Image (cartoon, rainbow, N blue to C red):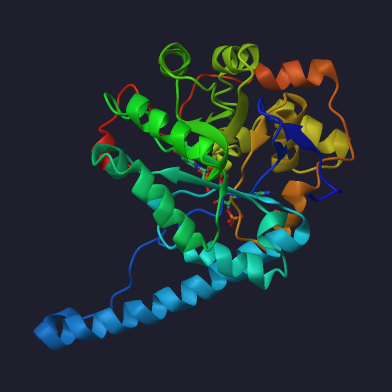
Length: 312
Ligand SMILES: NC(=O)c1ccc[n+]([C@@H]2O[C@H](COP(=O)([O-])OP(=O)(O)OC[C@H]3O[C@@H](n4cnc5c(N)ncnc54)[C@H](OP(=O)(O)O)[C@@H]3O)[C@@H](O)[C@H]2O)c1
């Protein structure tokens, strides 16, 4: 536990940090290619392969340094998914930060492909091996894959009972997905991770989760720096009043709503400022004013309108 940040308590008693870091995939961004070298056939291909290998090593080092920095700053929850690949980098960052496995709350997710292939058990053991751990704090499925997510969840329930998972979560679930789980499965999910930010506040879904004891975790919490938030006068006014930046106001709004945000930042200064949200309090009317920014603008995919083969 880190005493400098508050923790929420999940419906099975497990404590979870009220903010996390979502480092994303090291594979994010394009591959590099040396100009014109592609014209040299086989040799060109080899050169580009070597260049990309070196580039990947460089990116991996930066990634580990960045995640280790966030842990040193006080983040204790890492949001991850097997779909992002390279889970071994998470273990490297924890050790680089000088922390023990039990100091950190590790999240991972079953990929859609693993769900289609019915490999949930194998998926978990693969993640455990890659992460170099004997349990995962919070295990979820990445998407509620139609005709598969109930079977996936039931398999996750078994792994939970075997002690390999400390808390069972889900991801990208609408109310009807959650209701199906509540109706057909044994264990109420401890958490649902889905898109939440001031342009897309998801009030009805959050209310449903709260009513059923399901913790809400907000992904894309900063709306990836969307221009419409940068220019918003309500948010600008609050930044000025509290001498905080836009991200801090939004993350504080999450915290006061009982929501757990997982912002991504590889920038050391922004990692520090994003966690510096516990020394001020928004008034009720300011919370309502931020709620009123909502225009139901979803920036990521809608699970009700998605080819699950194309993501996660
Ligand atoms: N389950 C799912 O399907 C799903 C989908 C999407 C995301 N996620 C999770 O949620 C995490 C975060 O979501 P996201 O990456 O989509 O969006 P986000 O956290 O809303 O935005 C990330 C972007 O905001 C910038 N940023 C961070 N802090 C900032 C600050 N204080 N001021 C200005 N810019 C700032 C980052 O740039 P710098 O790095 O330069 O700071 C980055 O470009 C992911 O890493 C992942 O763990 C899950």
